[in-house]
Length: 401
Image 1 (cartoon, rainbow, N blue to C red):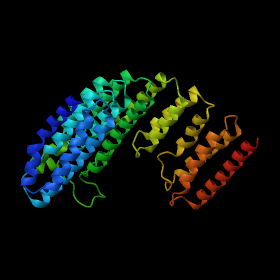
Image 2 (cartoon, one colour):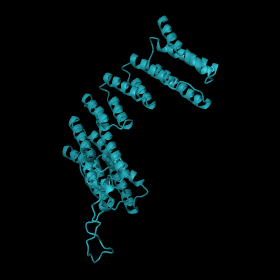
Image 3 (cartoon, rainbow, N blue to C red):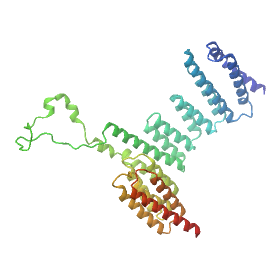
Image 4 (cartoon, rainbow, N blue to C red):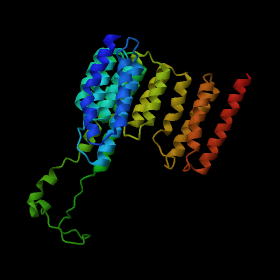
């Protein structure tokens, strides 16, 4: 116990100059300083005792984060000069002690990673992630977290893919990792598509001949054959060198054509032995993403695979019913036709042997969400209501049987 007390006293003495400076500059009163010191003393004695637990470190970290937040507010209000990274450094020091004492506790690692991310301490964040992944290569959550950080914080898709692919080497059977990898690729496609729309390069203009031939009787003006804008303004030469075919070429790359998401799905099905539950989750994950050019091709590939591997499975039938309407707005002239295809497939499924409560409940939820859309046509709304009644009758008869 004497050793624990000595360690606690050592760590407390290191914070004395900091507390004295806060009191001297009027950031905290003497009573507040005493309470902070008392609280730190209690935490330090707990941390240096034998029965210390990970939640003790988590509570100590939370306390220091709150103290630092209060300090920042008062420094801003009082307009005084004070070290800006003192509190941050102290929190990192506590979390580093926590992960060294309990290296197997994933929660402490995630808390440290999240704090570094909030503080935008990217160099330290990279170091923490490297240590955590070396210690816990079989934890899918860490690989997923690292991939999302690379994508969202650094906009580095190559690094994000690297994290996901390395994670799959260690966690081949992780369903969540396969799904998150697919989601990451789809979000990347959605961002690229949105950027193209903002920049106006998603349109593919066809070259037009603006010059009329000399002697054209229908022309309003006399055309000068061979005279172009280049002859008048030679400095505009760079504008005429723009490759109008570039957007089409970009859309055919594996990153945007859907080839990568399809490859991920195929690899996952091979590794997970055509798990129908995971296949349905893949389908739901894809359709949740904002409309992207390759949406229908990816979904159709998933449905085709499910139909070839497990054609009579109720999850396969759910995807087959939904896929015609995915990505089509209810206000589109094309929607009634596609919805009719979905209803035809639903009727075939209800008459078959594969009809079950899972199929009925999934389609019922889908139709109810569709019914909540105020833009849905009145005639289509009546069809949806009628179909819901039919599903309820089928479900009641199944329960009675």
